[in-house]
Image (cartoon, rainbow, N blue to C red; front, side, top):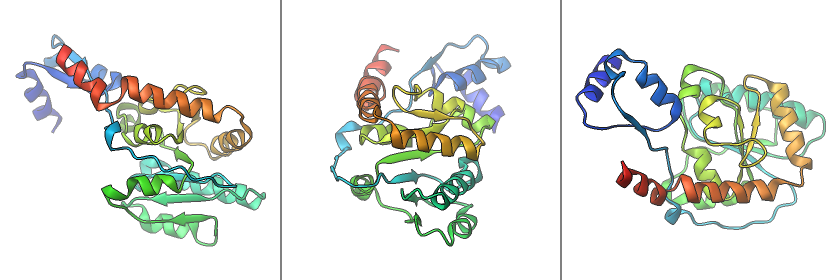
Length: 232
């Protein structure tokens, strides 16, 4: 598959990568060494974002995405189970589907503050985001997580939710720690727990949310990407 990808790009007039890491990966391929590769990052359509404000006494954490081993949901669940055992009452809800679903359901059994809520349709996105406050993405470190920039964190920023994520390459291209989101050490239950505790006592959350929304509007929207493509 990589061979055919490389041949296709070699005979293309222009090559677009979605992030710096992917560009560097492509430039390392022999046939593409002399090829000019542009970067136009993943982006979201802000015109389709409908924000519904809901006030809650306790912040609700959520994971929204594919339920697969690389996403680190086993670490996330372990972290919340331990925090709940120590008296934290904040709920974790999980949306999505994938090969790790049966294991996930087994892991959360017995903790009534962790809920699996299944999948949802495109027209339910605004409703789903209205039910949560903080999106957490604990991806494990791997070649894939260091290379691919996911869309879900950008979507969360557009919906004015705080985004927390493991400090892997794809996330670092979206999140500036303490400015547009919160990063924590990957592959560590203790790091997840520490980040959650810090967020719950922070007085800087709204500023981070505002910064992230502005970042998406200026740099990661379909409108800003249209300008970039026109300039290439």
